[in-house]
Image (cartoon, rainbow, N blue to C red; front, side, top):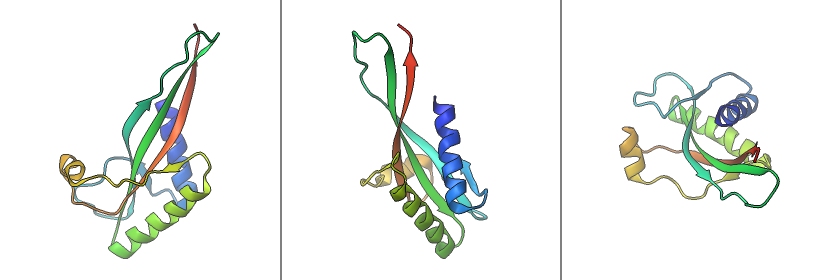
Length: 126
């Protein structure tokens, strides 16, 4: 389920950017080059409904999106992905930015980012 979600968000980013410069990775500590990092930060499992014939595992997956390159280019890349996320009905843009402790835990400087969330589901036989 997560592997499919990773493929889906990577394909979405590359289609929006119109070039293969996105990677499933945490933000770079030494951001050399140019590109976009897509980092799965949270897996929020929704409660299952008992009594149904089939149970469904439902999760909300939250991804942190950062860009690297000179500041103008990084901002341009984030702008493209922001518009693409707004236009994608499967994504919910998170409105709360990560706090300083989050960036400290990753070992990187605070930087502009997007956080998107989308639902992934899997049917589970009883």
